[in-house]
Length: 212
Length: 212
DNA sequence: AATCAATATTGACGATTATTCATTTTTGCG
DNA sequence: CGCAAAAATGAATAATCGTCAATATTGATT
Image (cartoon, rainbow over all chains, first blue to last red; front, side):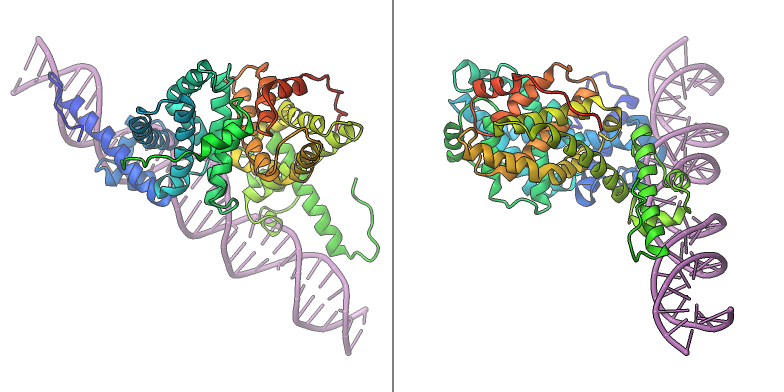
């Protein structure tokens, strides 16, 4: 995929797109398999079939590469969530579905689980990558009188950190899997709805995610 | 301080206490000055006046030493908070004061600020070190009908991650300092009170902290 | 006081890896 | 074809965590 020719694209540009994509793909495979820390730059370079130094022509550091991997994972998840929530009527339900799905994916998908260290980086990526959607949903739900969130950006930021922190705790067995619902309920409380409404929202049946 | 003799304590035990204390003190000085990452084990060992390998007789790893430093900082802050909130009547206010103080200290005290990387470690330390107090406050406030928190442990855990995440964002200038109040309001919302009550609680005048 | 097993200390060293950089290869253009 | 600029290369660098064999200290026992 993504090998489509772009008219007027020279060989350099084409090779660069190929290298960048190959590096991110290789890094994603290795990092999501053994963890970002355990993945070495040399192994990534070899898997992408480039020289060790070439990685640094595309990414200033290993962290920057790891960030690109994370953003890719989150982009994919965001697309899946969008596909499902497009049909929802209630904007509050869109938001609730989103955070529930992020939580379930972060704890359930082994690829996400391997990236769960360095939570500040992950929370930040989540904030940036899914922020536009989440903040839009918070605004809609507030406009519809469902939430009371005049500061959606801040609420979303706090939610990201809490969400990733909870995911980490669950992945480490410090929280039971059943806690997922309660986590969602409490995060919904931050939007300004009351506990009963948050509970109702969190317990609505959810359609399945399309696989990515 | 802490050089008090313990009756029947041999020289080994005395030296071990001295070494452990000296290592934590040295690590605290260096780590809070230049950050935990930039501090090297060798420099810490030299400042504590022990050999480079000796550190590993007391702490299995650099992370474990950093954790001890963090726990010390948090212990000190916890003592200060306790001294102030002892006189409060409203348990909800005790909780509100606690989280506000953690936030202000994390963003204002340069020693804390230097430790703000690796937020999952810090949030975990906060959860463990201040958890007994915070959870007690949440229970009291719930029993008094102020909060609705049947799951104080979970709410506290989520709050820790959100609190540290927000502190990090403020320290990096991604959030303005005035956001502190809103952060506290939204964290209070997680306890199950409504937005108006949370706002009132967050805006009550606060007595100053005794310096530690 | 002498002995000695147990324990603690030491610091040189090994091992690992992210990153750099001088060199080589490739590209695009006149 | 020839050449300058850009990109790729991978061997070398650098930095430091944690190990370990050797050494020093301790204190119970004789």
